[in-house]
Image (cartoon, rainbow, N blue to C red; front, side, top):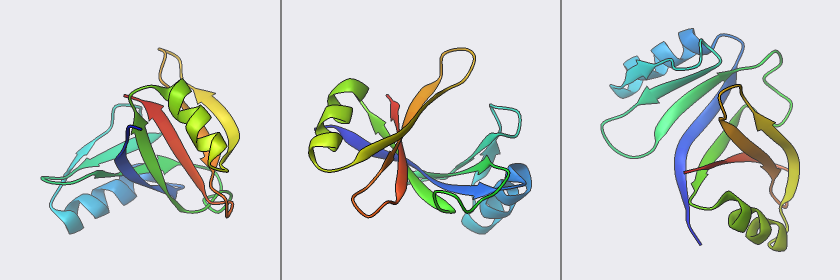
Length: 114
């Protein structure tokens, strides 16, 4: 088993503004590698905070974990065996991809390859 928390991710209609606010609150720096769609708040310690732009923040929840897996296929099988379900497979041009899961209570979380 090898899953680590990469980010605690917040859904927002204005990812850049909310990330800037959290950076100020937490003493972090903002990194915007995806043109305002997924904005990282890098912190001095611990997992980071990220804000992703969505049209409606409520479907799937406003806050979720982004987990990092050494082997996405192995972790997918393990999570499914533990009762999680796959909600969606996602990807961006350039090869960045992730899987959206729901836990046994329906809360969504994402797993990205490390």
